[in-house]
Image 1 (spheres, rainbow, N blue to C red):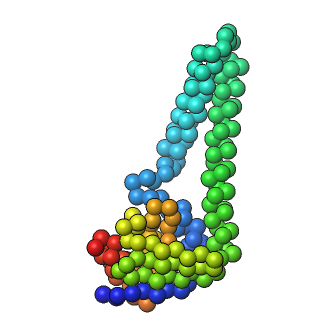
Image 2 (image 1 turned 90 degrees about the vertical axis):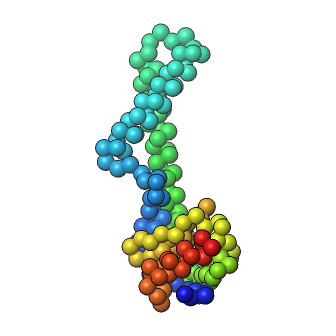
Image 3 (image 1 turned 135 degrees about the vertical axis):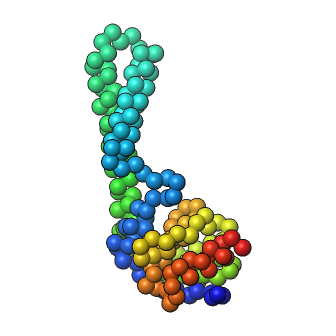
Length: 170
């Protein structure tokens, strides 16, 4: 097995988007009907909690306008949350688009990741998982994902991942 990897690469925007939006195993986001049911349930529960709060603290005889206002408030809260989530993905994309070359030095002691104005040292105990996606290896740490394109490797991606996993679990 290799004792050290020294990698230098850029990350293509489409690979970057796929890597940062890749679900974490065991925490997949619902899609389709499950997403609709989950969203409706969130709106109903939020609306119900607002109505209950108002009934507990105010003397309100007509529930119609209050329920409408509570539902509208719930939709606004969910809309703001969704917009923030989408803009966060956009921020990551913009940072990657302006970024310089990634340089990683990886060995049995950990990972040294370097970019312009950034230098990070990551020990293997801080790495939670190593996963492969189409075209890249993801190194998942507590606060981020390191993306290593398969094109940057001079060995097979499965061999590379096996070596990283051996270091991570040693």
